[in-house]
Image (cartoon, rainbow over all chains, first blue to last red; front, side, top):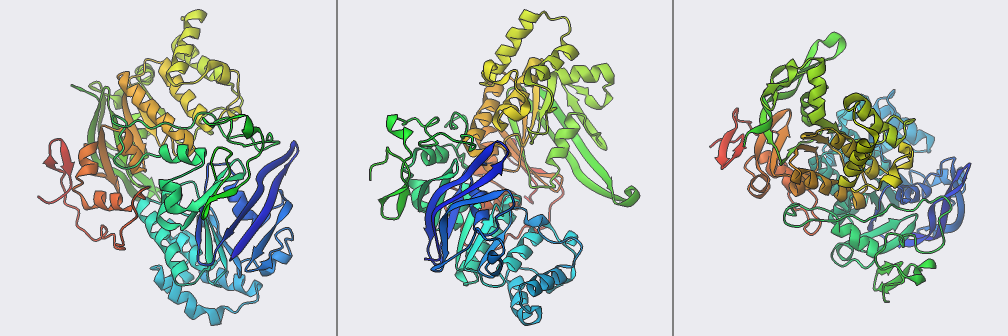
Length: 317
Length: 292
């Protein structure tokens, strides 16, 4: 297993109390696996990704363990993570457009970045140029300022930089959201290509757009209210979801060919729970058509079929 | 059926760069109409000029050339009180519900402002029932949203409240510019269905989006915009079912489907192709910029 996360809890500190954004999360990513993380805004998917690489000041590690390639990853220790960040665990941030330093040419920024991590820019340059070419960028981009690149070019540049040291785990957070459909497709296909070429051992692709995940991911993890709802192969999540939330979510997505006149889709009534001091039990129960008395207790995230995990009392094992 | 809103050869040129020395054509020679009781979707990628068209219709931005007519009248000639009368019939809802509101006004005050501006002589009881009727039309519970500040409401509720506010007027035409892009997947479809319900009430709606599947779901007719120009237009079923322009086809090929994977093609090939100059009919009410 490339990544093993067990019982991870990460809360946000606020004056009113803790916001339980990642609350007892357990999953693993196999070598070579592209795992998609799907969910609505505020479900904790970005917090989950961030907690694996960069705990910002307001984020508080509460409990749980993370193992990368069999060795523990000290995510609670900001300093100790420095030796893993970028080289072993890397991230393509949500706003890759603004991730580049605007006052440096791309090449110089990268040279400074590598130097700060104890790597030599000169010796990595041939590989860098090869990868830039692979994503359709000219070596010229290294001599340009970020402002001179288009959105799609910046996105690709950041992808190449983030994966330059062949990390074991790459976290791609909403990287296709701000792009047009054609660029989106190109970037999504690049993710798969990077995995196929072994630039990255495994990936967590975080997005709210489940149809993109169906295209690129091997498995999909669905989050709801800071907890895991379901994890299974991408095909099973789309074609045979088990969790009521996943079912309703998938059935509410319009597809090309579905028309209002002929097939009216419906959303899920209600809103996601506030994660500031959430009540005990299944967090979807207020919106769930199947909710019963049993749902007052938190359902375990258990395997109901080979490789198919669901957190719901109403799903038979 | 006569058109409710009609655009005739509208062009918008922005001055950009230092001292406005460079010119950028955001919208070039766009003509279409929206009839009462139909949803027309305007689909384009970022920078295609789709929002500019919505802004021009609502007089938030002047046209450089061309005419926009509402029920036969040129909207650019409207002066103060005619413009106010125009806004009684035509309103817009935009992408970001969180910045559309004054954060210190509660929801009932937002609606009260409509009364002050447009219905000063309507008595309290009538006004109250009007508010209840329009909130009901957008499936909002008055008890849940009135007396609340914008930050206490969800994005879906805020967008619906904006539509409810527009419905208090004698609304006939609505510009819905990316109104569900910022909403969550589980609630966005309900706001989209709301447009369908408004259409049934006889409203004409211009639905502006970058998302092809949403446009396909709700609209009767579709226009595909590229770099400010319409490359294809026609009944939604025709444009999506039988796309004629290579750009439309490439967009459709790039849409991620839920039950079908992308093909293995890696070329897009629409940047090199020559754009013929005119929109030509390729089917009943179906136009495309292709060579015939």
